[in-house]
Image 1 (cartoon, helix red, strand yellow):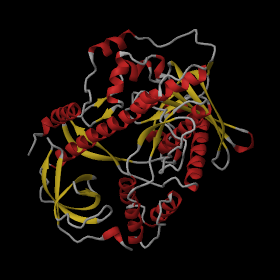
Image 2: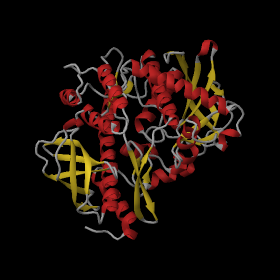
Image 3: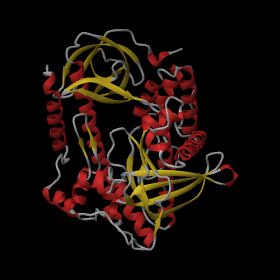
Image 4: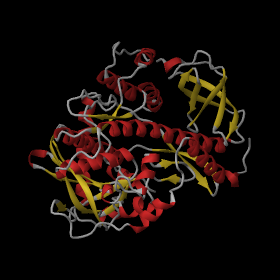
Length: 498
């Protein structure tokens, strides 16, 4: 089904909206929510007595080049003995979005921002997410601050959580900061104008590398996947661009993991429930063991995060070019993350991939509803107020957020495939090398390497398993339905034995 190039963006937008509606997601904000947002104003002075004034610190945001909903700022300072004090400021979205409001109702329906190639569908109206609740440069904003000491080994000491007023001194990007930290570029101009920020960024990088090393030593998995964005030339999909991992992304990832753990422990210590983010012990561990055997390696019979991490480290060193392929296979076999409401005294399920027990989502309240729920719990705990959610409502919210996150991911996945189908239009008959990423009664899927596109194996799928290498031919595309179909044509090299 061929689509004229000048119609591809409109087609993708139509597909996105249709798929959202079919899954019970709202592509448009209800009029009452928009009207409510228009009436809002950013909180201003005088601030409450428990709000610290931290506007003079060298705060900065580091995000994607096109990000406008800035959820967190970071800053670091040296401690005696070689430690680093890490501070994360999270936008105080709950100061404006009240439980039960029209804006909250829409956010609670979708539970997440949805990112598709033709258009993003934010969880909150842009009046909030890109303005009043976004930590924009030069603006005074209320925030929840998490302060953690990182020692020389990457271990974290005592942490504290409090309210503050902050000001973003520099809006930075992963690409710019990453290139500078890795010696591939100059210090971004936005950072160069802020006294002390260059040294602060190096401290942030130092602390993040320590945190990463410590987590991996304790079993956090070494994974690297290829994230792809569709690039448009006018209204036509012209390329699929892989985003590169760099040291700037690791700053944010590791600081957010530390902050989320600190907040989970803070709530637990105050006798509050926690909306935890968990990844259970993998049900398909045996298939992961089999993949290791195919590489001439060994894993224990029972799930063991540290052993899996060590295997992944060995494979990264042996074959860095294809390591993302192995990572993708392992991620598929680990299973999905989910939200679980836990209460004082209950057994806690941890996050297998991060090798942590105390973990929540709290650092992106503009984009994720569980983070907004956690923020309300946190503020009540700080103020000594009653718990704002009962057991049954919080458990129901955890289940709902997991289900709607799954729906949102399916929309995003479909649109990535639809965009890829637009790009591959006219390529029927070409052959590609690929990796099997899914194999079940529902079908078998393969991701080709160049361009990085996933599709279904319609012919010759018998006997294929996740992690197998195959040669496939493109036989059909349908952008309207997000279909990319392949036929297996070549031999299979199971697990790429060496």
